[in-house]
Length: 133
Length: 123
Image 1 (cartoon, each protein chain N blue to C red):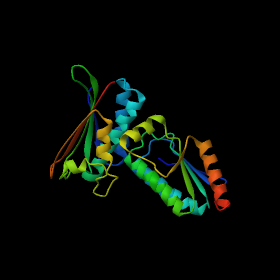
Image 2 (cartoon, each protein chain N blue to C red):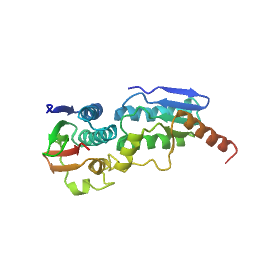
Image 3 (cartoon, helix red, strand yellow):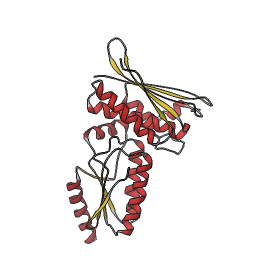
Image 4 (cartoon, chains in turn blue, cyan):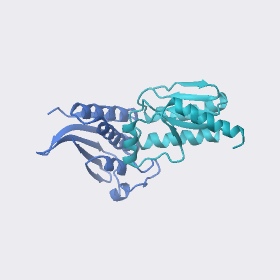
């Protein structure tokens, strides 16, 4: 299994770097181009959330197995202010004004597994998995 | 990443050449709004064929381009959205409602030509 890929996010240009690395990794492990685009788009959304709300953090990409399936895991992590109401943040169209409010709920729709944990004052971790078809 | 903007007749063509950062997209938006006036353009084509991802920010900024150029008196057509990108946009719930799109540059020109001709006639 390939080693994990870490992309530091502390500038909006890093959003592009993170999604390009994600697309390359997805293609490398055999995802069709349409899935690679979905993965790149989901990474773009979670990486932007880091830039907008936490200023800095990281995106970690690696390959995962669950016994039957292989896939890619994307972890977006920051030590930012955290999200007071995660359920609200996951609602379509909800935004504190800096975005369309479609980033996180949109990302959740285009991956297979999506988990978010956030603690006010401590930061946010989003974990997404997409399995090979 | 600079986006070249060419003028052909009274149409500006912005051909995105590679993945754009959020700042690049905002710069393109502002540049087009300015150039529509300075170059007296009546139409704008934004070619997104080379855009790797159309996420919520890119969609919002393209919508901003369409609205700003409209306020400056020009019509904008978005061309070149790739099949995989279109599919991802649909799944994300991103739409370009009320925004003119065309398959490619050629169709974009045709669409603008008929739309601008209609405007001449007051239609």
